[in-house]
Image 1 (cartoon, rainbow, N blue to C red):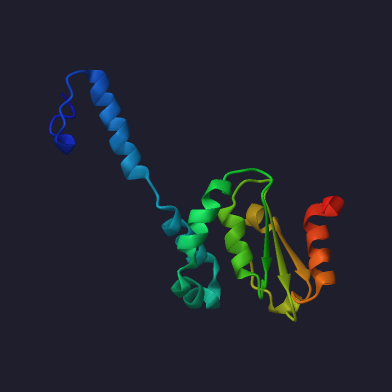
Image 2: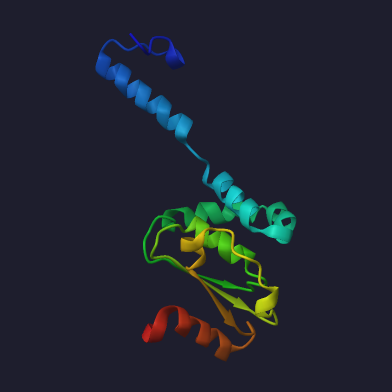
Length: 151
């Protein structure tokens, strides 16, 4: 039978063999969420890549954000978006069409913004808001832009 000896197990029926094969395929296809996020960051971070990747935040982000990754209508706000490369990474990570990514930048002109390399559909999800994170008025304006008057 096909799965004799695999992981020290023996299958006596073709049904058990099929189940074992499906299990092995799922192991081979498994992608560690932190490694996947690392790869997305690596593709999108440009010149900030080394600093961002060395912090290893991707381990914590992947653990806490993975349950929301495939949900539609996710909105992510990033304060301190700087030149936007992390926003583009988030747009690829939250790949559902209904996801929106908002970033607040301060003192960064449009001409200094990085080019989005996450694909047209993902790049269209990114919105930039100019403001100062120490200003309650600017933070309220960001939340209103991202969520409407509901907040």
